[in-house]
Image (cartoon, rainbow, N blue to C red; front, side):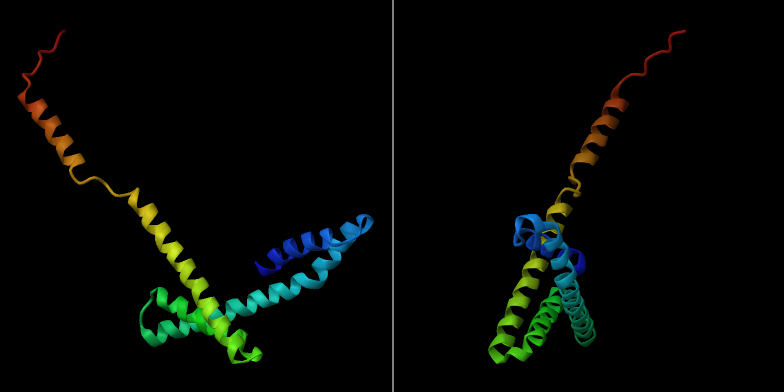
Length: 145
């Protein structure tokens, strides 16, 4: 996912920043140079996030949104750790907020989609009751031969 997104991003960037006659070559060169790096970074982030997420699930013995928010916090802090305390703190908070927003949007979408599948409680029994009452109160019609 990171390599595909990186190819698209750096291809467009290389195309735009190259001289007129060399745009295709500039796009290909940018893809070859930067897309694997972005793919590797995305893979590193995903691996650390999954590790922290599974560890938190094991420690807490729960599976809820706080595991992914905590995993995002730990991942962001770990990846920015070499930049010092301030960078690690900002990376951790930023990543945790991003994961909280993603989880919140996911919950909102689930509730939105689940609302359309709920049946009205009074609809079916009332309709069936009316049909049965109507059918039972009507006199049977004789069959015409």
